[in-house]
Amino acid sequence: MINTSEILQTIQMIDQQHLDIRTITMGISLLDCASVDAKIACNNIYDKICRKAERLVAVGQEIEREFGIPIVNKRVSVTPISLVAAASDTNDYVPFAESMDRAAKACGINFIGGFSALVQKGFTESDRKLIRSIPQALATTDFVCSSVNIGSTKAGINMDAVAEMGRVIKETSLLTADRAGFGCAKLVVFCNAVEDNPFMAGAFHGVGEGDCVINVGISGPGVVYHALQEVKGQPFDLVAETIKKTAFRITRMGQLVAREASARLGVPFGIVDLSLAPTPAVGDSVARILEEMGLEVCGTHGTTAALALLNDAVKKGGVMASSHVGGLSGAFIPVSEDEGMIAAASSGALTLDKLEAMTCVCSVGLDMIAVPGDTTAETISAVIADEAAIGMVNFKTTAVRIIPAPGKVVGDLVEFGGLLGSAPVIPVHPFSSADFIHRGGRIPAPMQSLKN
Image (cartoon, rainbow, N blue to C red; front, top):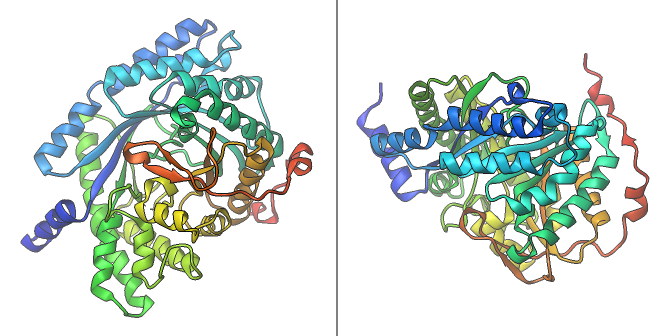
C-alpha cells in the first residue's frame, strides 16, 4: 500500500532532485526482415520498425501526463544489422542505416540503436561489411547508433577487430569534423555486451530476446546526492544503506512505468535498467555523489573506492525492487554528460588513467571522452584493448566511447549540446602502442572462462 509520505517523497524527487525515466526503449527483432535483395530488406526494416513503434512516443507522453513522471527519451533498439543484412547481395550497408534513420524520424523517437556487429571471436563477411560502413553510416544519419562487441570473457579479445575499430573511430571523426567529431558519440566498442541494454549508444536487441520487448532505463543521481546530504560524516555502512533505500524507491517508479508502457503497447515487459546516468545539469551528477562522500574533487585518491560502494549499493537496492533488473544497472561515468566530471577533468584531477581505474567498478567504461584530434588510430585501439581486458578478466561489461576531436588540443572544450554536454579534451600518453596493435590475432580467454 502506497502512503501519503511515499507520494510526497516521489514528487520531491521529480521536482527538486532531477529524478526521471531516462528512456523507454522498445527492442525489435529484425531477423524476419532479411532478404537477398537489399532494397527489399531495407523496406522490410522500415516497415517493421514503424509498425511496432508507431505508438511508442504517444504512449510515453500519455504516461508522463497521467503520472507526472518525466520520460526523457523514447528509443528503439534492433537486431544487430550485421545479422539481418548477411543474406543481402550487397557490399554497402549504409542503406540499412538510412532505413533505420527514416523509421526513427517517422516514429518521432530520439535514437535507434543496432547498427552493430558481434565479433568477439571472429568476423563473418557481413561483419566486415558493416564495420567498413560505420563511418559513412554515422555521418549520413541523425539518430542511428552503432556498436561493435570485440571481446568477451568466454572468447577473449579479437585484436584484429580492436585495430580496425581504432581506424573506424578516426574515420568517423573526420567525416563528422564539421560537428566536432559527433559521429563518434554514436559509436561504442564493447567487451561482454549485454542483449537488453536500453541505453544509447550501445543498445541492440539481442538474438536471445523475443520479437518485441519494452525495456526501461531510469536515472537518479540527484536523488542519491540529496539522500547522502542527510548522512554527512556517517560511516560507510550507513552510506551504503542510504543509497540502497534510495535506489529501491527509484526502481519501483521505473517498474511502474515499464508495466504501464508494456500494457498500453501490448508488448512484453523486459527489464528495468537502474543506472545513475548523469546529465550536464547542475545537481544531476555522479561525480558530485562521490564528492559528497568526502572527496575534495572527483578523481583524487579514494574515488575508485567511493564509486565501487555506489555501484554495488545501487544494484542491491534495485534488485530488491524488481524481479527483472537488467541491462547495465549501476553508475555511469560519461565525462561530457556529467557536470562534476567535466569540472574534474578540466581541473586535471580526472585523467584518462584514473577513469580507466574507475571503470573496473562502474557499470560500463570509458564514456564520452574527448582526446586530441591528432591521436593515432593505434593509440585509440590500445585504449580499447585496455578497457576490454578489464571487462574480460572481471566478467563485466566494459566499453569505450571516445572522440578524437578534429583540430582540438588538450585544454580545448568540445561542445555537443543537449544530454551529450561538453567535453574537455584530455591528454593521452605520447608513447606509441603501434607495434602492440599491429600484432593482430586474439588475446585468449582467461582461466575465469572455464566455468562449465
